Image (cartoon, rainbow, N blue to C red):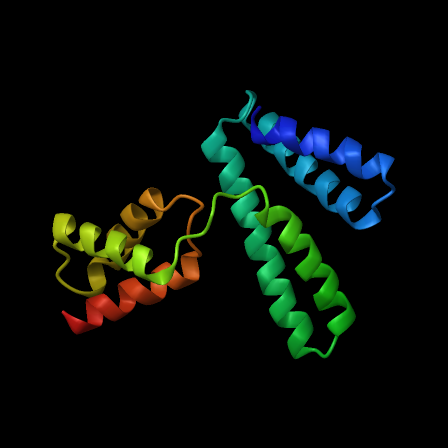
Amino acid sequence: MNLAQKVEADLKTALKSRDELATSCLRLVRAAFKNQEKELRRPLNGEEEIKILSTLAKQRRESIDQFTKGGRIDLADREQAELAIIEAYLPAQLDQEAIAKVVEEVFAELNPQGMKDMGAVMKEAMARLAGQADGKLVNQLVRQRLQNS
């Protein structure tokens, strides 16, 4: 069962149990999958589904930050609940040590010469960490490593 089928099955369960939050969140995920399928004119593969879910999770994190800064705790709580639902479909997130190890492997292979090579390092690191790490954290680790070398 791929992610789209799992989302569909969980949406039916949420509808039957009258879970408003899960229903709206899963409908949003399903719509994002369908829109991408229409754009590509073919079914999505697993990597593309994970990329869409990662994007949705990132949007939720940014919204939580903005709502918290704006004093709208009620909206931040709702976004947090949606984030938890979306993250349930994503692969387990790696801890900082595991991410740092992957970054070190990329550095060993690419041998970057400074900040000008950051784009290439980030591209390779994010490809290896597909959906398993927050891009912001990876960026922070790569930036620190480049400044130290």
